[in-house]
Length: 354
Image (cartoon, rainbow, N blue to C red; front, side, top):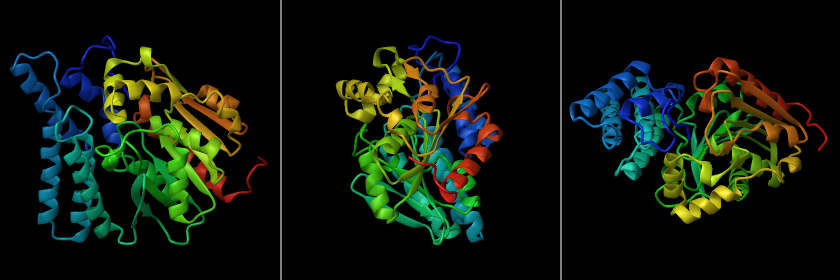
């Protein structure tokens, strides 16, 4: 839900502004910095040549071309490892093709899902696809893992984005379920966002067959995780990253309102959804360990950050990284390893009294 700095919130961004606003998010998701700069730089140059000030109509097509380049490399690869790595990279590019205006967003999301499946077939054949009425995703990690963590994406993210978070949890011996829920990723074209996300997490816990899960939620996923921690008793620990405590529809930047309207199925539905994103009464009901991570440079009009959530929750801890942006992609060393360690300890050490 980030917006470019240095321009009025309701002004449509140029390609250069939009690319800069999403740079740390892209590199945090594993896109190569130089390839990202090359693809977005060519877009910005073409926009300038046409004499346009704003417009992102070519964003999706450009990112899908980059993704298909990696698909072609995968097909030419001489080892399964190389092919799998190219398929995984293609999945990331296809996912980022959905961020800008793109008439083929549904196709891009499907292609991201398919490419990630092909990558895991080669790189992690033990990974399992698990689906339910309102979710889909991949379960990765050892079958005998001591704990399972569910990674929950946000408004315009999906299970193909947060590889560094997933890898950090996997390295600590946990199983990880990376998911798309209503209005997210592979399900965005056929479903709409819902504020009672604990119903979805309940389905996930049922499908995983576990009595305890950890949750990591990023951006709007932070709200989903906190709401679920308050209402789903099987949530044993939770981490939110750049998650909203409250949304104020009238103050949200127009690009965010437009995006939310697309994911909610219309403006009125989006306005109602935004009105439900309020943890004031739910935060005190969170009795499991809770870690809230915010970036000091993540300032989006209409979004109240997570400090009240950590303060009101019974076992809440608050970490604010002063130079961190939205999703803290520019500050990974300051929080990611520590958050993964915190989650591992929270799920494997004796739980605090609820």
